[in-house]
Amino acid sequence: MSSTTMPDFDRQSNGQAVISWTRNLYWSVRRELWEYRSIYVAPSIVAALTLIGFLIGAAYQVAKVRSAQSLGTVQLQEAINRPYGLAAMFLMGIGFVVSILYCVEALQGERRDRSILFWKSLPVSDLTVVLSKMMIPLVIVPLVTVALTIVTHILMLLLDIMMLQISGVSLNLLWTNLSVFEMWMMMLYHMLALHGLWFAPAYAWMLLASAWARRAAILWAVLPLIAVGVIEKIAFNTAYFPRWMQYRFSGAPGSDAYPGSEHAMHTWANLSVGQFLLNPGLWIGLALAALFLLAAARVRRSRGPI
Image (cartoon, rainbow, N blue to C red):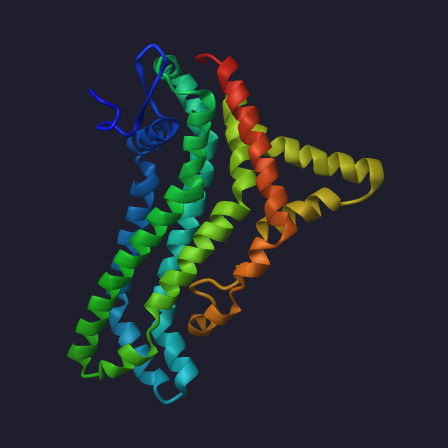
């Protein structure tokens, strides 16, 4: 078969076809989605529970919108948008939890079930495997979270329309005050910027702990960080490391606006992509993440089944 008909394959000097690195990475990511169904199952369950809660409280929501009409435009917008913002926040929260638990389990799990022997027999480098696992919290979980939020919001909107029509409330209130598209754009930015790039060193560190630890990888990921803070305090009576950790987890500069915040309709203007991309903390964190990933790949190369 000619190389022009199979663009994903390179050809060695001896004529043997080899799979390209990008193709290996693609199938490695698909493997993660197949093995760790919690990546999309857990957010789907939260989305379903959110819809159930919204349906149960639909009558209360209509009453709240009625009462907010006499209070002013800002109060009316908040009353209409609040359930949608809460749904987005719940899904963002479960997305973050899924990312943390996945990173802690990803490399230790394949040693525990001995599947590492099979995966190491394939022509896929350890670095490609580690990068494919990093793609899950960095890209896949944020995109899955945003997609489920969009579906959830659309179903909530249909329920809202039905309840408002039954209650005799004008649908113009919904069309003129609801801002789900802005929420979706804010959430996409927030998930990729904060939950993805800004938290990248934390995910990479947990992957390294997962590759190294024989048991309780979460403890090996957390205890060294606590130990550094304790030793710094005892030895120097300072708290630079804890303050740096607080800085990393308190939110990325330029990504403070998110769906669900107060008056979420007006927070789109607060986003500052330039401030985020030019922040030194972002690039220092990405450099640390790269070092942790290289270390995780090297550790995986020397590790066998538990």
